[in-house]
Amino acid sequence: MGNFSGKGDYFMCGIAGIIHKKAGKGVNIGEQMTSMLQALKHRGPDSTGYAMYGKDNGNQILRFKVAEAADLEGSYDIHATIKDRMETVNSRLTELGVKVVKKESPTEYAHRYEVQFSGDMKKVADFVEDVEGVEILSIGNSLELVKDLGDASVVSDQYGLNDFNGTHGIGHTRMATESDVDIRSAHPYWAYPFSDVAVVHNGQLTNYWTNRRSLERSGHRFSSNCDSELIAVYLADRMSQGDDLETAMKGSIDYLDGVFTYLVATKDQLGMAKDVMAAKPMVVYEGEDMIALASEEVAIRTLFDHRIETFDPYHGEVKVWQN
Amino acid sequence: MAELRKETSQEMGLHEETLKGRTQKKFFSIDESENLTYFHSFDVDTSKSATIDALDMTPREINREIRELMEKGIGDITVDNPMSRHGVGVGILNRLNLTFSDSLGYFGCGLIDGPNVHIKGRVGWSCAENMMAGTVVIDKNAGSTFGAAIRGGDLVCKGSVGARTGIDQKGGTIIVGGKTGAFSGFMMQRGRMIVLGDAGMNLGDSMYDGTIYVGGEVEELGVDCVQADMTELDVRYLTEKLALYGMKTPRGVEKMQKHISGKMLWNYANLEPNEKKLIL
Image 1 (cartoon, rainbow over the protein chains, first blue to last red):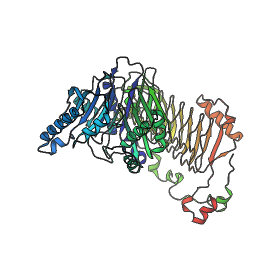
Image 2 (cartoon, helix red, strand yellow):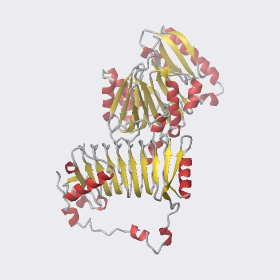
Image 3 (tube, rainbow over the protein chains, first blue to last red):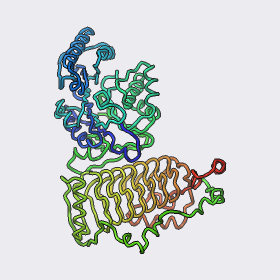
Image 4 (cartoon, rainbow over the protein chains, first blue to last red):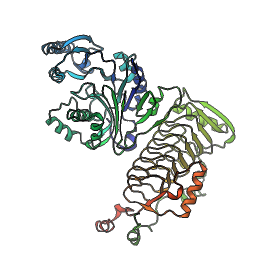
């Protein structure tokens, strides 16, 4: 997100995405995304986020955090609090019959569980998020959603993303303008409760509060005060009513007021939408095997050692690519 | 085709006002000697050539290198591997043949007055912003706000461009080989824009003056932009101008649409409420 302020808004937040059509066993999209996001650092140094899609091994991947990064510096008993929260999360997962087959903890506050569960994952998400200070970042069969403070090199090192193999991904570098510098307000946003759906956004939505209240009355949950989350929740709402991704995205052009360019990814698709004023940048490289998108060509250029052909999508344009 | 309705505003004397402030004529008065020299403009010899490999250079280093070469009198410079960097080739205030072997990022070749630039790739947003004179030719596509506020020279994109092309254009010529996005010619004040492909919505919105030629389809005209008749002079001008850059429109220049300001919004903010009602 960012402010719309004429020429000054060129450099607020950067978004990038990549999808390989013939990835087979996957390519190192972790390194590719880091390369692009690092080149966009000047657009947003506050936080960096990734939503990347790896191989589906049959397990569900649960990414969650039990505290903010800043909490570690500001509270004397935070370590005990984190331990308590983790115990509560584990007991609640057990209570719901969720079998955790693999646990990873890149940081003290951010965790990755591979789980086996055939029931209602929305119920799991709601029950886990009911624990104070706990937020589900994503649930999916192949989605890995990671976001933290710092630039892309910091976050990718911290979470070991530089050798992540997959088919596609989206990412975001954030300059905080309307909500705090914290993980909660960082992108991407998971489209709760839909598995494997994530969104990144560059822009400012002016009907955020009106539409948020309307969606909350319909039973949707918001985890932050960041206007960009509205896009994820709206798409989730439309898809829950039967829309496919492209139809939901086309609906968002009228539903969202303000200036925006956003990327959305699902298990096998990558989509892009631009507002009717075309006020936010997006450059697209469309090759035979790979599509790369970014707020600036300088990011895409890091992936190539030769000249490339790119273009700007037009106002009100929606594009969806399949891998 | 919409008819020009200029009687009302002209009867009200809105087109006859005297411009106030420092006009260009006064600004370049021979009595003001400081106005006769250009800070950081150099005498160069276009028969002297040099090449810069910009692969590992920052934009500031590239611009400094160009300036140092010009100081040495070199008038033909090629920049290899610009790598889509922003703000490159800016502030050049003298004649120079400058070639970029690949794409540029934002604000490429902004604030220039005189050089002939050839970009063998694409450009990002705001290429040649505030250009005063010279030529900039781009082989591929361009981003939004292409040629914002240019005052002179020829700015040519052989591919398609993004939104708000020629926003606040005050002179010169912008030529687009493909299509242009929404709000092209927004608040245009002078000059000409030639679009060989389609134009997006709100073309020429709130334009004060100037001319926009479109070879393809226009999605929607903006407020106060009206279609006008093509004249023989227009056809001749377009034919000769496009020939300069080896460009053609598939349907022929005679079939192009010409758009100008309806001038119904001219000085709109200064009108009394009853006057606003009169012209709307």
